[in-house]
Amino acid sequence: MRPGRPSLRELIAAPHPDVAPLPPSVAYGCGEESGVRVLRGVPCGAVEGSRPLELDLWLPGAAPAGPAPLVLFVHGGAWRRGRRDDMGLRTRHWTPGPFARIAAAGVAVACADYRLSGEAAFPAPLEDLRTALRWLTLRSAELGIDTGRTVVWGESAGGHLASHLALTHADPPLAGAVVWYGPSDLTTPRDGYDPANPATPEALLIGAAPAAAPDRARAASPLTHVRSDAPPFLLVHGEKDTMVSCANSEALAAGLKGAGAPVELRTVPDADHGWYGLPDEEVEDIFAHSLRFALRLIT
Image (tube, rainbow, N blue to C red; front, side, top):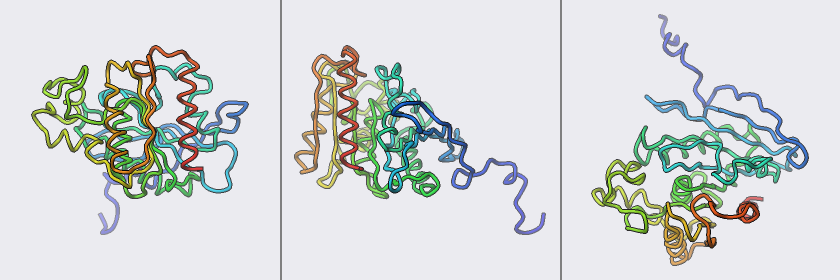
């Protein structure tokens, strides 16, 4: 082999996501969603020894005056399961779906993969979200997006990761966070959660019972990373949540407020996890309120 010539191993490998051609976009919907386009399964990161990281990207139909702002959506599933295109139990039947609705409002939506706890321990999923943001920034001119105006939006375990990302990511800094019923503190016993139990989703996330690995548990808790210059947060949580105690959002709201950071806490009476138990119109109202919050920050 001549010097400087790629090896066969290099030649047969798929192109790195940084330089790989973008897949074609597909038109979505009609009416208000007319013109929304979707790019599905876009490679955005390569992790040695692991599956490729991918994202779906929803793009607004009506071309804005400049690059579109961005919502980075982070799915739930107890850090152990879940799909990047799922905003939760109560939105699965929507037509049009939640991401098409956000795109129709003039905001691009990236729904990103991250490694689950059966694949790698924390902070791997957080690193994967940083990888997605880096890739989106690198390819932003081709995609017509502005990652300098990004709101991260997550539900359940994705809300935990969204909170963590908003509090710790600096390049580019995030404009805000929408967090639905997300864990904020892995160290404190709460209704239905025992930090000494090695079988909880939180224990599987960090690789040990939080009580047995307090430093890891604190590092993985968004509450630890509260700062005065945090971006604005919207925290929405059901008061009857039997899977992630509403006290998580109350504690994070109190921490942010105490630090002088902007935060809005909305607790929802009679709502269990995933908005279970709410009438459809209340779920629609929560979504609309969350979207308005994001739009105020990035449009």
